[in-house]
Every structure is written in C-alpha cells, then in structure tokens.
Length: 244
Image 1: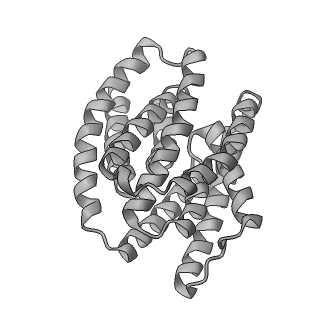
Image 2 (image 1 turned 120 degrees about the vertical axis):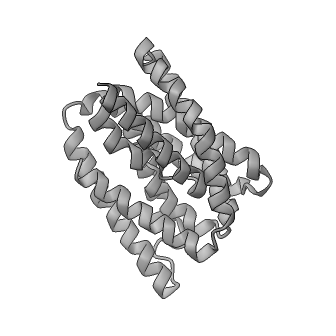
C-alpha cells in the first residue's frame, strides 16, 4: 500500500507539470494510473482538487489574456452536459471499464482529426456550432462522470484560442468552475475521509514544485511545439483510457 501511494504521488507530480504547461491533460493522464494505484474512490476527489489548484496557478500568472467570451461560451454548453453526467454517474457503477474504453476511442478519433487539421490547415471542427457545441456538451458529460472531459473540450478550444497563454489561461478558468462544482458534490458525498485527506495534502505540496517547473517549460515552447505537445498528450490520454 505504501508503494502504491508513492507511485500515486509520482503520477500526480508528473501529470501536474503537464497540466501547467498545456492547461489540460493532467487529470486524464493521471486518472487511469491513479485508479490502478489507489482506486477510483480516492483518485477522483484528489485529482479534482489538484486540478483546481493547478488551474488557479495558471490563471494567476496569465489572467490578463483570458478570453472571456470563449470562456462563457464553453461553460454555457458544457455545464448542462456536466449536470447530466453527474446525474448518470451513480447509475453507471459497474460499467467503468467499458466507458473508459469508449472515451479512449472518442479522444483518439478527435486527436486524429486535430492532426489532419494541423497538416491541412483546415479545422475539422471549424468555428461553427453544429459540431462544436455537441462536442462541448459531450465533454461536459464526460467531466461529470470521470472528471476528465478535457480532451473533448480542448478540441473545440484549440480552434477558438490561437495563442499558447490564452489557450492555457482560458481553459484553466473553465476547469476552475467545472472542478469546483465537482468538489462540492464530492464533499456532499463524503468522499474526503481521513486517509484521502492525508494523501491530498502530500499531493498539494508536490503540486507547488510541479507548477514552477511547468511554468518554466511553458515559457520555452513555440506555438507549433505547443500544438504538437497537445496532440501527443491527447493521443496518450486516449491510449491510457483504452488500456485501463
């Protein structure tokens, strides 16, 4: 059990460096490994709180470049989806493996579309609402169930947000709102027992170091490198969900 907790702390540290660099992917990368190490009941509330803390760190640094109209648009569509996902979560107990594999396939499909879009310089999702809004709603629903709907929302945001810092800061603001709602539901459900809290405090200490390292890495990335990293992480996210 001690080795499992140490492994979980390592996963948290590495995933939150990535979260700080890109503004997403930390939770979805950490979740499959964390479930294997400490279980879903412990991993989900801890990763959710860490997602809030990491996002706050990014927003404090880049708050001036947040694109508020896009933030509002994403929330307006994703929040109803998240409400549906939160409602369905208790009814999906026992089907987690199947759902993770389905989510992995969805993430990989949209990642492939992003790669094609990057090479052809023609966005697959586009600026329109016909594909973008259902994508946001699905991302919200996945977030409500698993706290890791990021890759789906990122696909839409990558079309609307062209600058690295703008992309990270706006998405981080979205996660603060979505994850704070999840935190309230987890708190009401009694998820934060003594053992979970002890592990959470250890993770928060590591998070401070991860944020500093992530910020330094982010400053050195070009837009092209940033998008390549984003697409690579989405692919890793999809594969990690498939093998869960």
